Image (cartoon, rainbow, N blue to C red; front, side):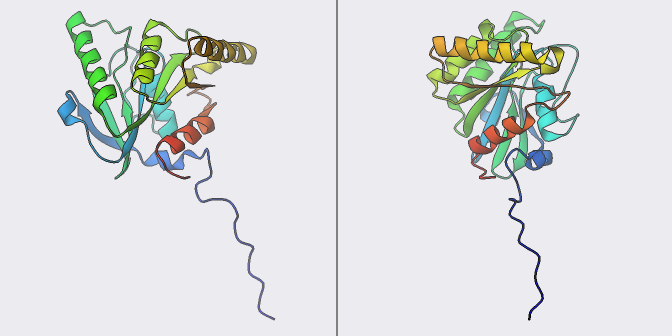
Length: 216
């Protein structure tokens, strides 16, 4: 009688919600003009108000505290920063908006660059919009959502800094945000997130896996 072999492992090598794939992210290029945007493959971009925790969210996703630049001074990200996951997939950190204390001319340049990116970047498969869970859906957030609608770009809202408020308040903010989006006829998914406690990380990973066509 042949020896019994161990039962096959039924778990997938990359189970849904596992962020191991994103840990290989590394800096590729900082683009200051549209001609520098990488082409081919597919990518997901992150946008949000300058003090909403965008860089922290990216760093938590990739388990790398120094990947995206974080600063106590809002608006430090002034270029479109591309991070490569593998040869065909990228994450993109867009300039923060709405709070940076910089000259108006520079803000206009940022907006022009972001408009070019959202309207012309063919590999872009989805936009993650970062909002502080205590102050979601400000004027600039609505503008980003309207751009997504106009360019038929899938949007996913990350209500960050969830650890700053109690669970009940988190749920209230989540439900209120979904209600306002529905009333405005904006098609976007929403979740809570905490970079500090990694709350909502699995949900974010599942969304990104789908957008990047990873099949994980």
